[in-house]
Image (cartoon, rainbow, N blue to C red; front, top):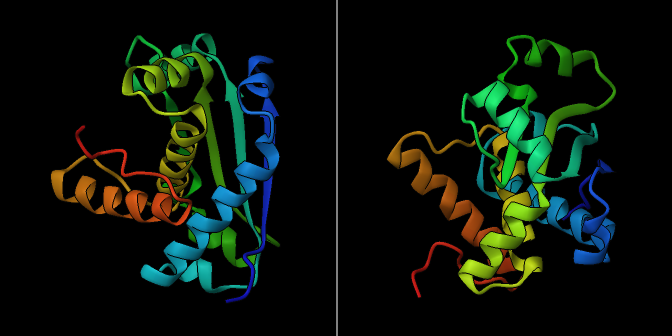
Length: 175
């Protein structure tokens, strides 16, 4: 299969990220490529069939920034592990991708402290939890959701399959 064309823009807002996961750029690019390949193979999304590169913006942040955005956009006054702001939700998305040179999927933000705490609580590596959170965020940018039980089950099946391709255990399996 042809290699996916994508642009991944990473902004590191919290310096602890580089110590926590030293090969962030390479790891993040591997995740994007794995998710896009799997989704293209198993889901019928028209814009993934074009030759246009896919653009994803990733902010590696902290609990303080994520808490603020979570309160502002989701009305939840607490930090969370990952936030996704999907352009596919914009009413003009379909029109914009017809003329744009690339497909801007949107923005993902991950909070370092929450990710670290969750990984420790679950007894998993930061690497594996980061792969899961970033995969989850990318799937949101592609239009997946988990508001209803059937949507959650469907999205989780994609997460599990993508992570398995990276030799990462099912994050939803109970110990």
